[in-house]
Image (cartoon, rainbow, N blue to C red; front, side, top):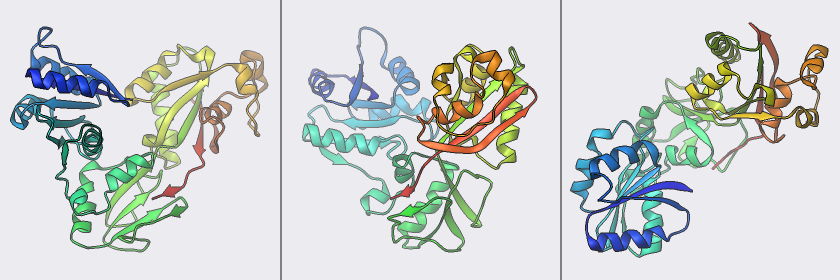
Length: 331
C-alpha cells in the first residue's frame, strides 16, 4: 500500500477526504489543521509519503509544494481534486511517482473526471519510464527519458538492445543500430547507441561476509571494486544478505543505509538447506556452522528463484557473491 497524504481546507474537502480514506490500497495520512500549519505538513509529506492528494485549488497546491520539488526521480506523486469531486488532476511525477495512476484510480472510485496532460498518455505513445517501473527496473539516467519520449512523439522509432530474452516488443522500438536507443542491461557502462538510455533490471541479491569490526570504507570500496570489475551496476541490487550473526555488523549496516538497500539475514540452518553447488570452507563451517555464507545468502536472498552470477570473491577481509533472478524483458 502506498502512503498517501491528504490535505484539505474546506468542510466539503473534509467530506471528500473521508471518502478517500475508505478506499482500498491507500495508507492515508490525513492533515489536521489544529496540529500544524499546512506548509509544515506538506514538507513532511514530501519526504515521508509516496503520494500527496490536495483537495483544493491547483494554485494552492503549487504554492505549497514549490519549495520542495527536487526531481522526477525522487518527488512523490502530487494530485489535486476540487472539493466538489468533479475533477482530479495529475500535477507532479505523473509517471515515475505514479500521479497518473493515482489520478485514474481516484477517477474510477469517486466518479471524478481525470485530467492527465502527460504527452505520451495523451497521444497513446509508449512511455519508457512507466514500462521500466512495472518491469521492476531502474532508469539509469532520468533526464534522458525525454530523449526517448520526444523521438516517439515525433514518430521516430527508437533502438532497443537487451541482455535478456524479450517478448512483446512494441513496434516503435526496433532491435537495430541507430543514433538513439534503450539498453536493458546490468552493465550501465555499455552504450550501444551514441545516445543511450540505460534500463537496469532490479534483480540482484548480494551475499556478503566480512571480518568482525571491519572498517566501513574497506568494506564499501571492496564491494564497489568487485561490481566495477564485473561491469555490474549497484543499482541492480534489490537486497544484501548474510548470516544472522552479522545482523549488527556496522560496516554492512552503513553500506546498506548509504545505498538504500535492504539487509537480510538468515540462520545457519536455513543457509545449509539452500540447493546448489557452493564454494566450501572448513574454517567458515567451524566458525558459523555452514561451509559457505556469501553464495548461499545471495541465492536465499532471492528465495532461491535465481542462480549465482558471481561466485565467491574474497579480498580485504570481505567475501562477496551475487545471485541473479531468472528474468525476462516483457512488454
